[in-house]
Length: 537
Image (cartoon, rainbow, N blue to C red; front, top):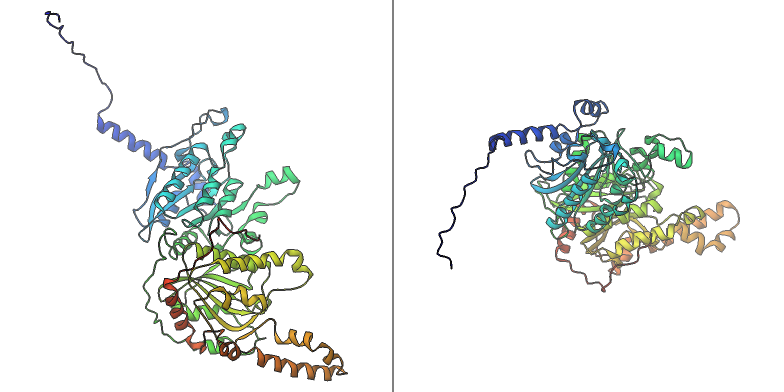
């Protein structure tokens, strides 16, 4: 070792002439205010002029006051293409974060039309990916507020498109794990049209929302068709014709309110039980109004929505797809505070017979409820499936098989009430005895058979009727035989064989449903192991 003393260390002084920490905090506040201004006053005014709220006004209405935590407010585009130079994209047109609805956490991905028409940019999609990951990890619902022109062409054009598409794969993986809502509050084109296609619940605002795989300019260029966005994919199209959307609402405020109501029926994930709410409606309340609502004559129509209102807590019912496939009513109600899905034949339309759309509508609700543990209540008054060459060409067999598949697969508590008719395969798909109902009961007016008495008589006694001679004699023997067959398919026959658990006074329908749901609370159903079934589509 050297005995020489170490050299003295030099002290170095760095000069700092920037702002102090308070100054940095002030600069941050200014930057945040700038980004919170969205696309600027002009574009905000234009948004209001179209009858739409801004994305931040929507979030204020969606979430409990003061509960929203925004992520990546200061994100903006990082595009290097000439077309993106000088563009200011606060939050990159995609507001993401987590808030609370009725105290429960919910993730949101909300597109801001004031920023480049809410188009999906690369940074905005990175933010959305982050939210989807959080929602799946934390097991909380996801709500999309869609007001978007679709993919941002300025960034997506070119081979870099090869890396995209993970958003839809991730949506599929979340399906049945956490509730997914896609609220259409403006345009949804191409990419932002597939989001509702994969979501569980899709409300649309009348007059301002529309969705299509290609907008009018693309359609004109591709197929030469001139069509408006409203005519091609407005709320009337998708709630009444295509069945893609679930509800048409009047404005943004109503849209956000129905989103809150919808989520109130569901648990935050498939690992939780559905939320039970308080109810002052007595569970043993008699429903004597049913005596007047439902005619004893099986050929006379009535509105089954009045039956649902009579038996549900406080008469409250949340319909799903009410303007599509109107021969079947589906939706949600509470029974003694317990949420349940309701599937009910509607005699006012097609006599309550099932067609391809009604079968799809039922399968959709059954799968949705089964995924999240909501019990199912079936109100049966079904003359069967429609028959004839027209429906066969539409694929009635595979559509009916889809409904059959869904009902047979469901393992949640199920209660079936046969109000009047349960004929043929209509009896099966409306959760007949073979489909594991925890309770199946009938009214005294219930008729269960492979077909209605009129059809059976025309087939079984055809020769005797034809041999009777003139029309009057034929009608007399036909009416006589119809009476004979009707006696053989009445409710007391099925109850006598114990194929119905009980016959009930119609006024006791509410209390019977509630007891049935209580019976199914501990239901356990074992199925053979499989990766998944092969769905009839």
